[in-house]
Amino acid sequence: MFLVAGLGNPGEEYALSPHNLGFLTVDRLAERQGIRVNRKDSRALVGVGEIDGQPVMLAKPQTFMNLSGTSLAPLMEKHSVPVERLIVVYDELDLPWLTLRVKSKGSAAGHNGMKSVIGSLQTMDITRVRMGIHPGRPIASGADFVLAPIKRSQREELEGFVDLAADAVHSIIAEGVEKAMTKFNRRAQA
Image 1 (tube, rainbow, N blue to C red):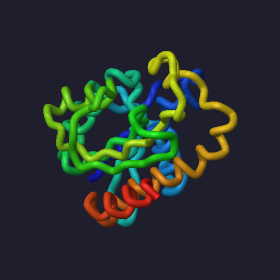
Image 2: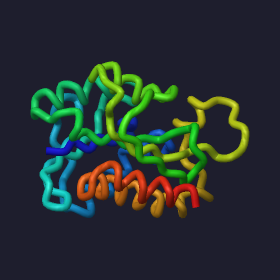
Image 3: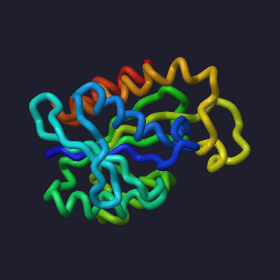
Image 4: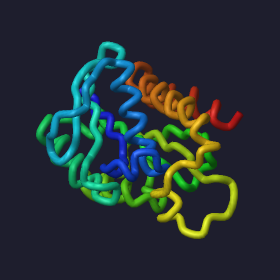
């Protein structure tokens, strides 16, 4: 089984913040596949179904971003999901808004949610979909920016961006991470 984990923060006040793009992508995948992500398991909301004929569990850790790994590690252990079948989707302040990058491994690059996942799983070999959120202008505080509501002017673009991330996850499951990297990372540079 694949485990697709969208990182974010629980609570209505964070629902449309840049830090919740992982949650929004899991919600989009759930909507497309008819999966209900509402069962509590290992401090996450989860739902099970299929994507491209492959069994998949969609998860939204409810531990808050910086402790995401404390939910994912027990979830993976309980359901015998190997790290090779984990896909993590999250926002990335180092990438410009609407830029998407698929990676098969790497450091957390300062992202505290990924830092927690890497620390809990004791590996950097984690497939991820990074969604760029940098607004292209100086920001006073990264922490304040990622937790504030997405600007109204960006909300129109948000739907397509979440669709793109969901397409990337689907591609990883259907075709493998290498093909997804070629397909989506090239498109992101265009």
